Length: 225
Image (cartoon, rainbow, N blue to C red; front, side, top):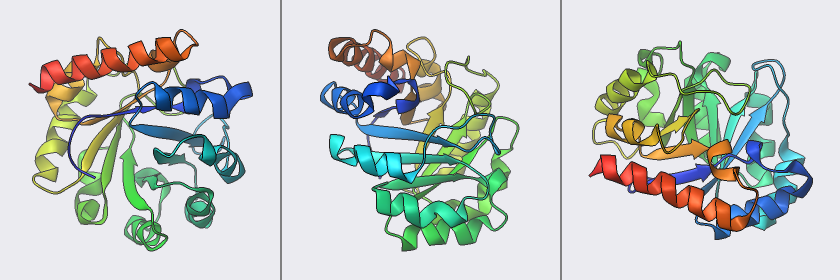
């Protein structure tokens, strides 16, 4: 999965009454991945959608479906999300009692495993599972709602994780407050995969989505260079 900048629009900020159309629109507008924020009202204070919705919109795009499971427990639902069409499944270190086992289970289902950590969770919490994952997700807001402001203190965590990852082929993803005015510093800290919701879906048209994606990509590349 390693290589290049990835922009992953979060469908959490889309118009849910036209979800399939919204996914197809950001696909055509230049999205690299489609990010699926799954919330259970237990691990995080919000409820979004489950495997049936993922299955229903899978045909709207052939792009990588990047599922972020903000649910506890996650293990009973891994197979359902894999069968629904998720290419990658990311679970929270804080929500998994046996994290190593959970990550092995995701790979056995044919999906690419990822691990996420919340703002208050130290990067050392995932040190011993790095060889199990294809992606590390740093939450740069407290999970549960879209439209929150980026937490600047997480930049140092991103830098430390980039050093921990070393030359492993692991993507370093950031989710929360990603916008043209923050993505440069995030990229400079070492992230290569960027989840954005309101910053991409602002405007409500495919043309605006294209412009928003291009702006994010441009600002990320400037700092990467």
